[in-house]
Amino acid sequence: METVDIAIIGGGPAGLTAALYAARARAKTVVFETGLPGGQIVTTDWVENYPGFPEGLSGAELADLMHKQAERFGAEFRTFAQVERVEPVDLDFKLTVEGEDILARVVILATGAVPKKLGVPGEAEFTGRGVSWCATCDGALFRDKTVAIIGGGDAAIEEAIFLTKFASRVHIVHRRDELRATKCIQERCFENEKIELHWSRVVKEVKGENGKVTGIELAATNDDPDEFLPLDGIFIFVGIDATSGLVSDLCDLDERGFVQTDHNGLTSYPGLYAAGDVTDSELKQVVTAAAKGASAAFEALRYLDNRLCSI
Ligand code: NAP
Image (cartoon, rainbow, N blue to C red; front, side, top):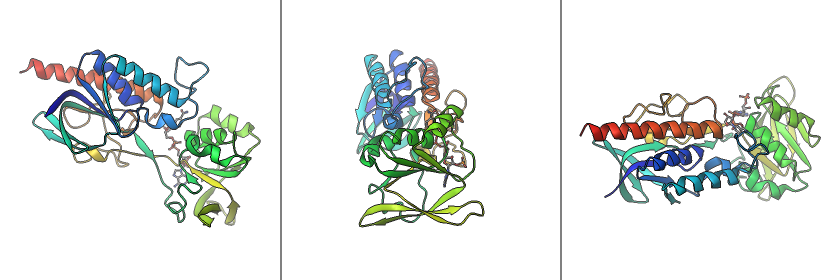
């Protein structure tokens, strides 16, 4: 069976940074990624809060640079490779990847998170027919059209601003009367004349005709009456769910399904580390994912050294 020192599952900023640190320490490091390296930042139009890039850069560009840097030091990448199972074998882990078994001395889980669904009628039916979770991917389809963004966090407000490049009108529907997004992002949103805010509203139903979205039925969270908002598209940014299923039987998760780690990235299972959006860390940013990836790799390397010394 193929044996690696450090298997990193997930190729977003946490996984790519863990790979950089592990490979520089000359550990045999393999990153398994279901798509291309980059993770969620690839779908982010512009990253302006990653230090060292005063003008900002596109998420895809940042991912590409991180990938090249890790590869330059010898990290190996298996792209479009789904890890189906992680199973402890003595002190190691057996990974089943596309039906093949690989033995890893240490695993760093960096599988990230996926956007949450609203769970309302019409959402599933009209996904890809006007309902989207990716403004960077689908924004250009809504040139001179009317769209709504659901949510009031960083993702929702940043993507609403991005969508004003294409859409003639961008409605933001938020369930409270105050946004959660970072203040400087809020300021840009309030200044943008194409954006209209609908406070204290939740989506009751996504409506459509002939296989296309025609609008959303909104219910008020205050005493206002329900209303119908005519639309061509709807973008949903109501938070994220951890992609922690691979290890849910192995280590402790918090009540929302995020992997619990100590401050060095160690989970409750020896030899299993986690970093980035899949963990229960409060601040979910590219810079924190990268930092946690570095810590997890550093601790994983120390654990490996201690294991070798005690043989
Ligand atoms: P988030 O910060 O959890 O915000 C989710 C938003 O959706 C909140 O405004 C929430 O309302 C609303 N919401 C949740 N469930 C809802 C429902 N069922 N119906 C209607 N609205 C609902 O999630 P996020 O914006 O996806 O961000 C995730 C993490 O990534 C955060 O830590 C964020 O800071 C980070 N991030 C950072 C950047 C950046 O720094 N540039 C960009 C994107 C994301 P309430 O406010 O009422 O709870």
